[in-house]
Length: 196
Image (cartoon, rainbow, N blue to C red; front, side, top):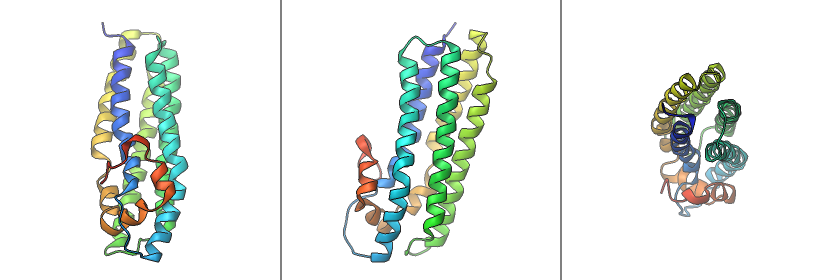
């Protein structure tokens, strides 16, 4: 019987894919000097930075719980909190992009709306995963491991499907304006260049 540990490692692998999504908010550098766009990028980057940290912390928490010999109860508690944090963070990023208004680029309003819709969808997916992990039976290790496996599969889907509208929002001038913001740069950590 497969214990919770190998399955939780799959969760971590799936999660790191999802984290790239936020880190994609780094863009690629260039300097065309569009003040309006730079101001927009600064606002979004400043609002996104604490959320990117929150998502990274949630990832770390799940990873830490995996490396120990954790009980199903510990895994459930940690993962549940991590999914809640991620749901909140993606919702907050969606709000930040919405609050910033449309970027000063061609189709800016559509790109912005699509990204907000996508971020809210990701937030809802994490909220759903939290509910699923909360409902798992920690008394039955076999059932718990199977439940974790299902959650890992959904996470995997989420991390591979999630970021199309965000990528579109960050193409061209928007990505370049964001790349100039120190708050976007510092939230990328090791994934710099992921969107470049």
